[in-house]
Length: 228
Image 1 (cartoon, rainbow, N blue to C red):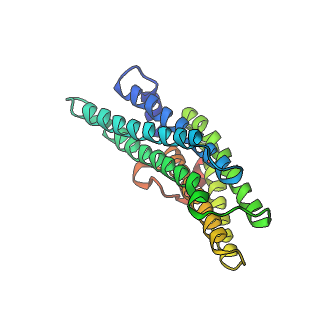
Image 2 (tube, one colour):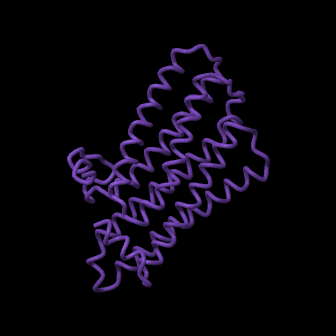
């Protein structure tokens, strides 16, 4: 069904315009995630940088509402009932992209809230590797989505699941460590926000390989079938 959705997105019709708006949402949230990572790891956010992330979040929210409105208008027209499955898939994917924007915004705020300065140690180095993995996945998602590349989607899903396990292990390490309260809060929140961003990217990728009723889940038999 995903291939049919991509075909519809490329058409010059209302669903095609929804696809354009969805691509804009992906681009905005990817930029938000990269900017948030720079703020979290490298430097305090300037007022201008903070404003930019918030403005991007507003744009993402507006695009989500616009796509919802487009879907409702499209399905209200007689003869478009065949597009219901694609519309349901799109509504689910749009919500995942919107949530990524929220978590990116939260990530950018973390050090301001905690007041911590990240230490230069193995734990933060691990979190930097997780960040690089998440941003690398995000870089690939738009192309995988555009090409409906099932084999690459499966590879990224497997990498993403491994990244999620690394986040869990890192939080366990933090809990058993000797950071002060502010640093513990900052590194734990950073790890959780990256895990959630990664999880929503996995949900988007699941739309490439999973049937609609298994969206956001990862049936190993389905993954194996798509990776052959």
